Length: 395
Ligand SMILES: Cc1cc2nc3c(=O)[nH]c(=O)nc-3n(C[C@H](O)[C@H](O)[C@H](O)COP(=O)(O)OP(=O)(O)OC[C@H]3O[C@@H](n4cnc5c(N)ncnc54)[C@H](O)[C@@H]3O)c2cc1C
Image 1 (cartoon, rainbow, N blue to C red):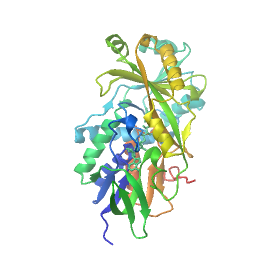
Image 2 (cartoon, rainbow, N blue to C red):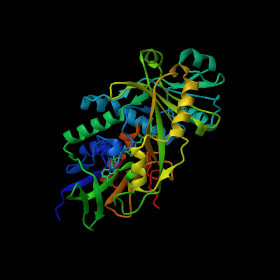
Image 3 (tube, helix red, strand yellow):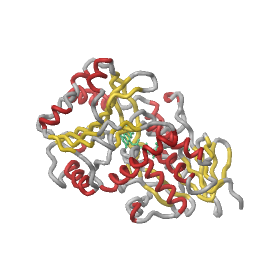
Image 4 (cartoon, rainbow, N blue to C red):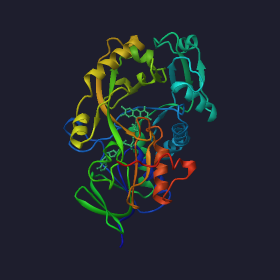
């Protein structure tokens, strides 16, 4: 039977748009189906994404060699994507980790130092005194060391990266369809996709719908994920604070336990014209099993207790923020059983999945998109592409 497309990608987010761009260079007959960002978040009743923001930390320094490699391979291509799309999204302001003195192999920072040596990353270790001198904006624990990746690190604008990927995919011949998919069904010789009241057919489908992958009948088998609430706090900066904080890098500060870390984005201008410094953490435990619950979360302002905790932590770490107006926003992180993204086929040989950012995949989304494109064309991932580790786990 003649189908409308060779491949349909479901989800116009960070991974889906990247997969579309990579596929556009490999085959013809690709469609990318997904809605854009809702104009009115608080009254929107459809699906949401985890990239509706202006800044995500990027770095290769990581305690896991696979994640570090996925990030490094993506970073290699940022400038090319920027040049070809004419859309800039990468701010190379560096990334600083601050925490207790790292012993090789011990805790996050100790493991990250080993990965950094193995991948030959350029990461400078700063003594507590050097850390204070270099980054006087912070009031850190005086025993903390710094681990600073000055180049090939900083932050990306996730909205702009998705725009760039989509633009290049479209220029490469991909059909962009602005609609929410209501179902994906393997019909034997082809796959049927219903979206925006229309029916599309394809030889194969790649579902890249982030935390919404198990909803809307997108997958024949549910993937084993935990979609977790995340709250971020914003400080609206005046001129004085912009002066103080504009030279800071993206920063991650550990507490006594690795889980107690906070991440801080340097001042960034948002679409409302104001400049905000943002911070978030990894402590929230609430997770979502239904479309209604996750929708209600995305329409909220996040968790007020988490916001208060983030604000007080920020004021301890950056006392000069005192007096700045604060707001908060919700987001969702999709954690997998393996701790790695899922890139592979479901029980259907025609429907594959590309999802599971584990709270850290914005920076690596271009490489993950490439792996999704490999799955659609070659059918499997080799060891050099971490095929075994990225194998999806189903419920
Ligand atoms: C608060 C927060 C902070 C983060 N900070 C960082 C960071 O500093 N650095 C970093 O590297 N990563 C960070 N991340 C993680 C990163 O944002 C995610 O890993 C990344 O967005 C995942 O990309 P994705 O394509 O899987 O999902 P998304 O970007 O969420 O895209 C999924 C897409 O699927 C679409 N979709 C859903 N359902 C349907 C449907 N039925 N039909 C059609 N389309 C559908 C959605 O519209 C969306 O566009 C953070 C995440 C959060 C929540």
